[in-house]
Image (cartoon, rainbow over all chains, first blue to last red; front, top):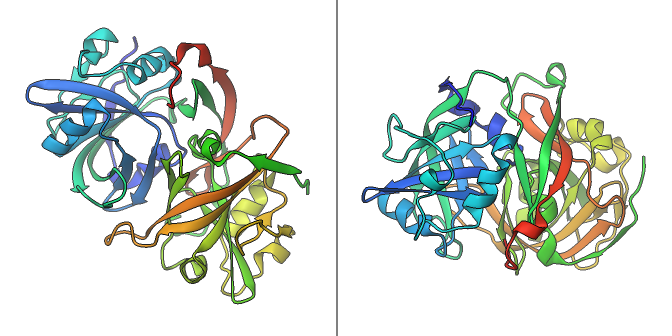
Length: 185
Length: 185
């Protein structure tokens, strides 16, 4: 599988890649083990600090790992990783080494213990900003402390989940930049 | 502009339309006035009840309206509404009647006071489930109490915001339904 050569990216810009709603792969590490889970239930919550809300239920093996380590990496897979995304979403780290099974490469992060996935277009290193933001829902608020993004292509072709095994692929890009005021929008 | 004839839709299925991450138009009504705002910072939080997390900052005129009325409608625009989406996102309901300015049609909802937007592919009637889900962030948790979705086309062509006036359009659909276990995923 293709590995992306990633470069440092301004964390205040990560909305460009997250807001359109791609499926992400959440990698984590705890007690000498790593894991990966798929996640479609996420949202931007802040520009700077860069905050990301994620829904991670206790039924996920990753839940305990992210709670204990208070760290993760949010990786953005491109469409060529469809098979890996399907596979990762349909097995559990409780009995599976997902990096090994799916032939993905764990790279060391800069600030956190969780690994980057080399085959993903972008990797955002996260620290837990708010462990129990909502007593009623398994919501995690992460602060993205470091971002690594491939220099090429300019934007990734991403997978967007609809449920029941259906995915929407990203389509073409439109720029209306000249129509927007010079403010953060 | 084209108006969609919408039909009742199982609220437990709304993730199919929301999870891929489209820009939505949030309509509200309070004290005899209506408003619309654009929203890209949202996420699914539950299947049943159907819960949707939204980021609505106090700088938005809609903030006071949704806080006071505790209701809104989440409408999903299709790509033909690009101009309206840009316009709505770049003016304020404080001094603008957005339905009038953008030639959109307010239709009465079934359960809430906020209007449906007839020109949108889907409209989800929402009641506030959790006004202060997080003391640190302007997050709202809505329960979708009624859903109205166009019968045709089967899935909408949607807009996905990247910031700075850049939009990603939805692309083609892939089904791997036969690969998924018979569980809610």
